[in-house]
Image (cartoon, rainbow, N blue to C red):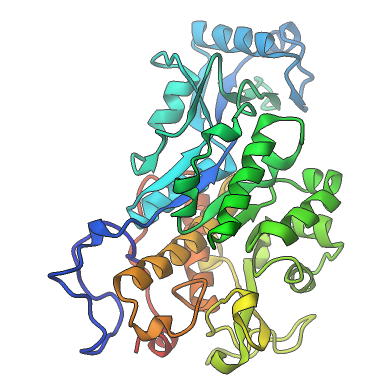
Length: 433
């Protein structure tokens, strides 16, 4: 998937003589396509310590816990730095990971909203965050704050036990004043995470609501990833209401889907979630991933793959269709696609962190590709109807699956480079005429 990156103009899909890019009047760099997102900016810090360090800083061994206060977290960080105990220190955050991966895949711009320490010292967490983020991610709209951004400490003792300490720092202090309306309104998608909706009393909550409202008013697709099943269970009704009001695309794993819908079966969870949103991405570990959504009855495309049944009979029959917003369908039909892990998954998986974020980045890339292509070639047969993605359900599944595999194989949530160009199947001929 080459769109919308700043690459040489060439044809990536079959076209006819009346369906070409105008090389003289169209320059890819002049098409301002980007996505935006809000994140609780946080750095993951891994250190090897002995039990005395845990005791000195009041951490319960083997548990995941909030730090007592920001001062304690800063003392711990200073201690780890001074004694050269830090093994790894990388930028984290669900939306930060997704925007980074999108920009790496698309070779194009994304815009991130959040906070950043106004005084950055080389070698500290804020510095590491900037270093580990793609230069294609525009960070100029970050809100400067006094003090540290969020930090997630993972401390490994000699017996191999991991102890986690979370310090929010100033990551929740994003003001709604630092959400520029023009940037959100002109984007191809707005990415949000349920974590920022966890506490209505925090400034970042109001910033999230403002961004979602702007996106909705300007027809920008809103994408929400759920974060964790514990958060969903705690704020189930509030999240359902937010999704119904603002969200077009929702992403989660099977635990989060069950927490939101009460359905443990991924297909039935997808079906239930389509009552809230227009498209659903559900990653289900060894079962691979599911993508579901809507297509108008008049433009349904039947798969040439084997028809499959589960809790929903013949669920993949129309997986060669392209996703649409439900409101754009005269006769909406629910469409489902599923794919097993790419090549069975990596032989060794040391860390599953970020696999879902990688899959979502691929979906966002395909959505942005559709917006890009519509601007560059609005007369194309690809845009006779209002579609949400450039590719079909089945093809987006393949792309998301491949990116997820890459994240798992490298044991890091952030891609260091793009993927080999994906293979396009025969079903693309339907949409490239």
